[in-house]
Image 1 (cartoon, one colour):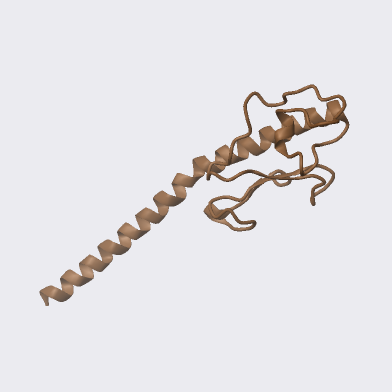
Image 2 (cartoon, rainbow, N blue to C red; image 1 turned 180 degrees about the vertical axis):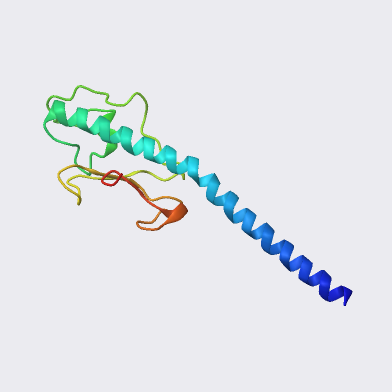
Length: 132
């Protein structure tokens, strides 16, 4: 009888610990998601300034780096448009950049969250320039 109670108590404690760890893990990603959102919005603002000066956005091949260093042959570039080098997202991966984008006439800028793959929910949710 004592063994059965001990196993049951141990199982309940393990489940509680697992639940708490899951909540802590989810909460630890909130600052990362917020930081990625700030970066995506910062890139979007810098891209608008670049567009105002040059009449276009950087092509996919030029990437976000065009906000720091003038791409060859781009007239009107008046940057740098960001005060520091382009950094990786909070999960250590490069930000996704595409122009022409798939979501209107502006570039697509994204961080693909914890899993690094398009799509997902919760901690795997993407941070996308075309969605608020």
